Image (cartoon, rainbow, N blue to C red; front, side, top):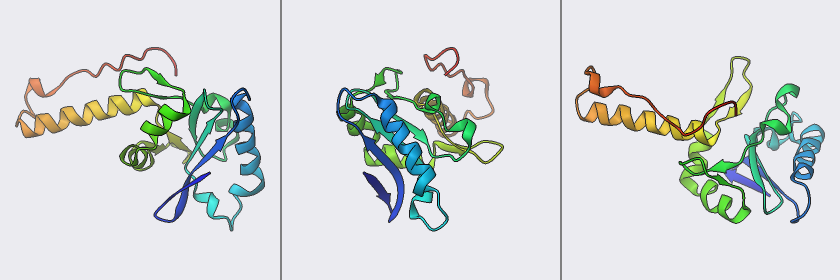
Length: 162
């Protein structure tokens, strides 16, 4: 399934039956990428995000042609702001594909690293970024930008490597 945004295919979803390993969906996306998605004349070269699911485990990851970044290790589950994972396809669809959320992920939470490789932020990174932006906005609105009370720490509830 392909999701179009303003007529461009930006998200590709690969679904497998319950009981099928989610790696099968990842491998299918990888085959599509090698065979057609990234060809010069393909509209699918504009894909930014892949979503894979077997119904009980749903993950997303950035479209990249870099070999070292095209690994199952770079797939991630969606999560709520408190970092509780959303694995079920129905719950994932209700949250991740909500119009505002999907557009924010595509426009604000997809970034390029120093070698121009597309990366999509993990849920805890998105939650931390949103908290930082809320703190900046409240400091600006409260006219406390240059005062000590305008600063702070952001605690995401996430520790250790991703």
